[in-house]
Length: 308
Image (cartoon, rainbow, N blue to C red; front, side, top):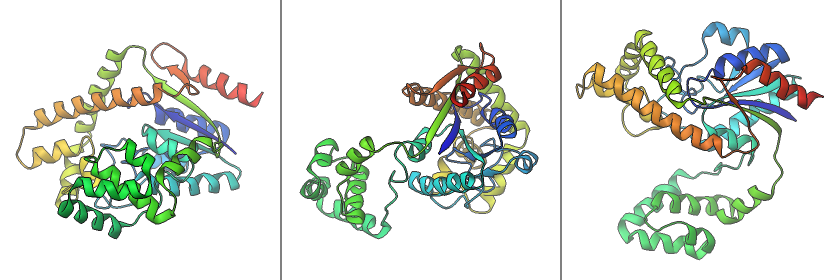
């Protein structure tokens, strides 16, 4: 089963290329962005416009409210369903976005990622660690999964709890799942196109211009609306979104709008660096430098080689 993915750091033209390609080959787009799943978070996540979504079906966008946590496991499950549905209808799934872990959870290690969850058990383990210490919690992991215990430091409570949760829910140690995921064949025949810049400073200028446009397009009003509804508060996933947490700080009087804008630019540049590091490790990705190469010709060559 064939899927295509267009990935890369922010501000590289992924969305425009995805829509153009979908029109050309009869595809549907699956957003691969950890924040586009949230309703109302449009400007700051650079979602496709309503017109674009009418032209080409988009999936994994606007599916939950911003006060609900959404994990890689949730994404893996729902995106896999979307892929299979698109393929069954004779269309080509095209992932578009910059959240590499989410893409991996579908095209590399299938739907495992960390799909089995037990919130009550997790809370119980958190209480256990507070009452008995991190070492005692780590001993629990050692008793059921020595290999994972050896790899995870006792002070990394979150990972220790996750490993215990996996064992409780599946009956199989996390270390065994990890080995299985390495040995299992990829669930899909995936062609990944990685857009990036050869000139890092040019990318940063594009990011800065993009942030300025978001501010001009009404990002502050969007955040104020969400904040007024009680969203973007606390420690849930959406509250940590770049572009939103900074404007919330401005709304709460902790900084000026100019300071918030500069912080968004800085945070986005740092995030882009992390994205580049993530995608650059993938040796089987088809890298295209958008500032020095003809992107459309490169894409035609990549896909032509597959079809030929």
